[in-house]
Length: 611
Image 1 (cartoon, rainbow, N blue to C red):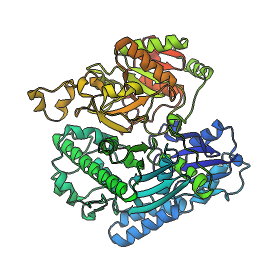
Image 2 (spheres, rainbow, N blue to C red; image 1 turned 180 degrees about the horizontal axis):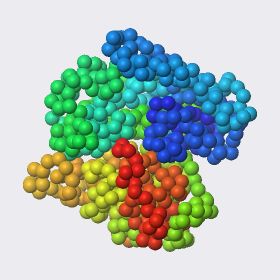
Image 3 (cartoon, rainbow, N blue to C red; image 1 turned 135 degrees about the vertical axis):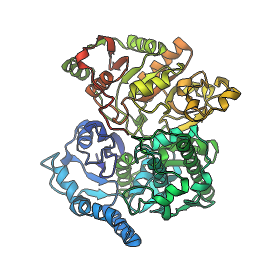
Image 4 (tube, rainbow, N blue to C red; image 1 turned 30 degrees about the horizontal axis):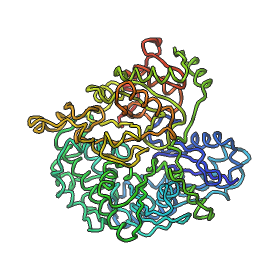
């Protein structure tokens, strides 16, 4: 029985995963344990979790693999400094001490950290290093349901590559083409994330959610920053950017081009300008991704596409690729960002380096992405008792029935069941749920529960068999990574006066029978739910459908803005007591807010930094 530990760390979203004979046993992000969002540190807790879950000591692991090559990354840093010198000395001087002290000699650093898990771990000879984009590509292809696929990865930057095309067949995966730093679609999108006043490497979702409120009137100006070829390849004009040499993403040339300085989120509100900027960069991103998809379909004549890298989390662009029918089938890695690199590195070692056969699973090999921690009923009750929570225990049928009643009465419900999800999306294990038919649910969940901007949309979880009746999409979307429009039969058309509204004024218009999950452009980020992947969640939606006729519920991640998704029953209870959630359903226990000790209330509004 071969056991491989995969690790990603030291940039953002550190994570660990464990394979046994090529099968994914467990995977988790470090942030869930430390409660520090996008935690980049050595994933001590995540590693310990995957080892414990597999009932292994570190000394029993056969190989350990890191998701990228530090020497190549260092080479890029040096060459970038030489190419741009004397510009960039400040950022170079800031980066150097950390590289010389830690990052350059990562094998030694990893070995010393790993020894802390197990005193019997004595040699670093089983530590290997993968390539960043190969790790992304492997995470997308090897768990996919395809024997053969073309794999497109796009993110900020790995060692040198920012975008790659690979071809996978059986247990083989070859990178065919690369675009190199500083030309990066991920960094371009992050530059606009920064410019509109959101946090780089976490606020990109906000930019995507803001885009439908605006119009893409700055498209031509953005094309002064980026030269897009017919095949989707591109070059960025470095005159406008600061990320290669400075400590910010954009510079004065960029600001002068668009006519404003970057928004200060502490002092300035979002305006129509920022919405139009968001709309424009989203449209350019979609154009590039569609052109890349078309050109690689034509070149390799392979009918299946796999996607990974941070840009693959842009579910609007993914939906547009699907809509264009460029490929017969698309599969996207649910942990598409750097966290998934831990998984890809391990899979690449198992299949490519060791030559092990791949058995293709027609559903995929991600187990619904439910790869994280799990708590028994006894563990849940012991934890709830120890923190002074008041709970009632129910059998399965009553639990499902009562929860569906709460939802149909417009209550906000924390839902904590089974294994935690791997990746940035809550998929019905660590979720906050609501009634999609409610006119107020979207605003209330944003402002009173999540403590975040009111414009941000929520996702519908829908029974897979009911999908075509409610949305213009027929393919499975288990990981909430595809956006599609609401079915025309469920739409409520806008009046002429409503069509004239601008910006955030568009928010309060009822657009469909399920307004809480219908974005201002009639779109939704869909999660299809099946009995095989998540029985308890499926049964809850089914019961809600029996009572209301609606096979859809609102699903958002169980956290407040700036907080990682909850991991333990205690995390769930704290979030429950720090927000205006009405009920918490955890294992077979239901907690009613009105029955809790007032002394246990928390103020979550100020607990976490803005994300």
